[in-house]
Image (cartoon, rainbow, N blue to C red):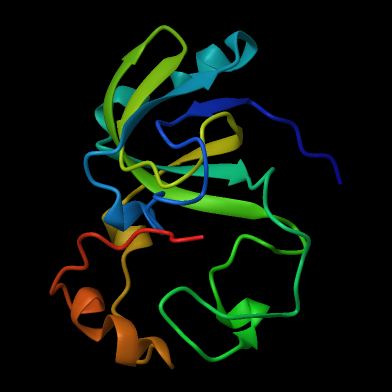
Length: 160
């Protein structure tokens, strides 16, 4: 299996502390997605979509851990029951709002990642395909029930 970078994501965040933990909590965090020139043609027609998924490599994540303590939780959980970046394949998705495109640079809002993060792919966000009702959210119901139900979760930041 071969992965190749198609660009780099530029964010105002230089370190994990203070970085929003999810793109849904990163409104107002603007940046640029620099797509390498050889992939510029693939941006055709993208400007018609308000939101897009960025797939990227957590290049500064810690080594994979089988058990982690999720953000805002105190109980160790299995890695696949958490959203920690220290994964066997440290690939992350973020849904960002497209503000504009100039050449091979996308200007976006909602960045929850570090500056100079390697970009692996861009996919359209289509609500009919990417939005699901979830009535069961496990241990997260205690911590995020109101946020998941649309009650808001402004201000959740990564502390470490």
